[in-house]
Every structure is written in structure tokens, then in C-alpha cells.
Amino acid sequence: MTTAQDQVRSLLREDVAPILRAAGFRGTERSFAIPNPGWFAQIGVQTSAASTSMLSKLTLNAQVIPKAFWKEVRVERQYPAKPSPNTHYGRGGEFWQVRVGELVDGNDRWWELDDRGTRRRQLAVELTDLIIDVVLPAMMSRMFRQSSES
Image (cartoon, rainbow, N blue to C red; front, side):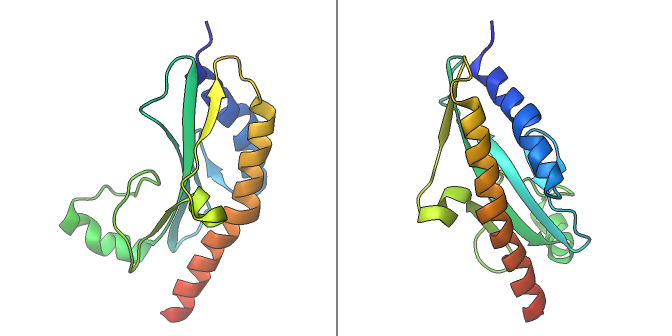
């Protein structure tokens, strides 16, 4: 029996990941990064605790953090060696973290996928278009803006 979580894994592995890799991202099913020596620039896929075997809900988080800043604060704050794009570390300053729906219309946005994979291909197109057309430019702008302020 295929579950909604199985469908989400297939969506990310088979439909989303190849397109994001072609756009320059590296990563796996739940976390994709823009390779950059000075930045953690990541997108994370987060599923809802309210998901069931029949219906999974997911959202996307974007994060841009200077690696030098992370190195300074991680020991003091007991953070891991690398930030997780699905963990909220704070607002303002050097941390830029956002739910991608906020970049579109200011609202949190969750997508649904059922255990049959209904609309899976359409969902893949919607997510990858959103990441490439909206999220990636916002992340690049954030890195450029912070670099020019330094």
C-alpha cells in the first residue's frame, strides 16, 4: 500500500530534485542548497504533523545565513555545525528565514498530496516554478544585499 508520505518522497526525489539540480541546487529529498562558500542558502521541505497515511501536507522554508556568522554563534548557542532549513533560529540581523508562501502573498502556504498521488505532476511544476522564479531570486538578493552592506 502506498501512503501519502510515499507519494511526497517520490514527488521530491523523482519530480522536484532533478529540476532543482538542473537549476544549480544540491541536495536530497528534504533539503536543497545553493552551493556558495560564504553562505548557507537553503530550501527545506517540511511536512505537517497533521499529515496522515492518506493525506500529507507540506510547505517550503527558505533560509540564508552567512557562514562566518553561523561559525561565531553556533558554539555559544549550541547550534549544529550546519543549520537546518526547517529550524527557526531567530529573526532579524544575520538570519533570514521565511516560509515561501510569505514571499508570494504574505501568507503561510501548505500543499497537499494524497496517497494516490493525485495532481502530483502539477504540484511538482508549481513547487519548482515557485522555487526557481520567486524563492531563488529572493535568496540571491538577500545574499547580495548583505554582502554589499559588509
